[in-house]
Each structure stands twice: as C-alpha cells, then as structure tokens.
Length: 351
Ligand SMILES: [Zn+2]
Figure 1 (cartoon, rainbow, N blue to C red):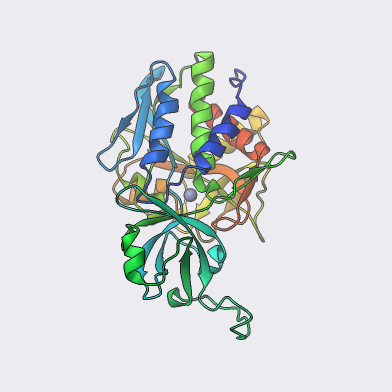
Figure 2: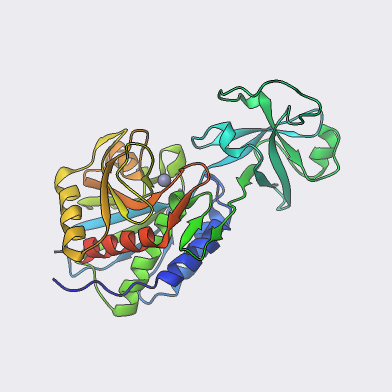
C-alpha cells in the first residue's frame, strides 16, 4: 500500500476560514461557490463547471473509468429569509434549514437586498428587555412571532425599512463567529458543511501537488441545496457506481465520535449506508492509521441520500469531521479535518 500524499493542513484551515466568512445561506451561495471555483482553477487540468441548478462540479480522470466515483460536500448553510416587514420597521424572519430559534437568539446577521446593499441586524426575542418584560423564561420552542430582527438602521416603520431596499424574500446570513484557537479548534457556525468543502479542496490540492491520479474517474460535486434536502439530487453523473458524502459527524450523548477523528456513518434517519462501502472505509482508516469513529446519527440526512432518493443507482457512504453542537455554536479541530482528508485520499487512491 502506498503512503498517502502530503496534506497541506494550514491551507485547508485558511480556506475554511475564508469560506466560513463568505455568507452562503441556502439559496444565496453564488459568492461562496465562485470562491471555490477560483481555487479549483489554480489546479492544473481541472476545469470546474456549474450545473444548471448552480452546483459546482469538477471531474478528475482516473487510472480507470470502469467504476466511476463521485464525492459531494455542500457549501450552502443554515440561514434565514425576510418574511415580513413589521409596522415597527423590524423584520419577521423565516428559517432556512433545520434549527430551533434559540440557536440564533442574540445572533448578528446580514440582510442582502436585491440591489446589492447589505444591512446588519440582530435576531432577538420581541420581549428581550428584562426592564420591560418580566415573563418567566420558559423552556420551549419559541414561535416565529416571538422573535424579530432589529436592524442597525434608524427605521421606525415599514416604509422606512423598505426605503433601505429591504423586501420580503431577501436572504439573511447569520454571523459565523469564526475563530481558530491556538489549541487547534475551529469555532464557527456553518462548519456543516464548509468543513467538508475544505476537505474536498484539500484532497484535490494534495492530488495536484503530488501528481497522484485517482483510481477511478472521480467527480467532485460542490452542492448548493443540501440543507433543504435536494442538493445532490442532480449533478451526479449517471454512470457513477459509488457516491460519498463528506459531511459533518454528529457528536453528543450516545455518540462515539469526537472532534479529533473522522466520523464514519453506518446509519442515519434515511437508513443504513452501503455496508460493503462502509466496511471498506473502515478498513482503509485502519490500514492508514487514520483516527476514525463509527456512529449512527439519530436525526440526520445527507446529500448522498438525496441523490439516491432522486433515482441515483449507486452505493452510498458518508463520513466527515466530528462537529460539536451541530446547527448551533459548532466546533471542530484540525485533527478531524486532517483525518477526514486522509480518509478521502485513501478512498480516492484505493484499488
Ligand atoms: Zn451538512
């Protein structure tokens, strides 16, 4: 067995940070995908192309094309959208993707208008001030009407807010709060799944830097609608025999995974992943000394499942860096990013 190509982990983390700081709520992902396309164009013999739905794909020739493969990671993230402009001039927002309102209470955000302007604001409970409202804090799921976005603009009514160019349907991006600690942690919203995108990019760079060729022709698919369930439903070549989603490992009570390993998923809400493929991934991790953990994810769906539900006739697998507090204040570690990239390279170069 050949050793894996060297991985440029510092570049991986730098690109991850840049991606995390480029807003890309589902439905407004063009800037982030343009950034990814720019990095892909730096690699020789790589020609990125956009699908009609806006996903980005590149295909690497393999040493064979008898059983082509594909890997996918998604650049779209949780976000929100302007639902109403209130008589006060503040905004009612609807959520994009699955998360409880308490996960964004107090979060800063940016609203993107149709004419390209950007406004900042804060998501708050309507009754936030303790000097005015003395309702006991209840442990419950807040309703949409209990929250609003306070704009950082001197507006007091809906007409003034509209005069800023803000309208129903404008995308809202949550501040990622990205911090890289000197202990190797990456703290940020949206590590799901920009960490996976950074892993794909790092594997591509390792192949380009060393001139290594994948075993099979392999398509890299950068998805833009995963958080709403149909990202990879299109864009995977029909002759692919295996599709791997590189997406976050879910951590918490009852889970084996951690922020220092790649999580390999055996089953999630959509059912079991392909048994043979999953066991091959485990064997590759063992053979290369890659830190891995096996897990089931109780409430989780992946783009690999979206693709087979859309009719894809291939075996599917799922692995990715362990991410703590997913869809909330997420965190992972360089160790997990490295282990995930190693496993991806091991898979790409495995016979
Ligand atoms: Zn994800």
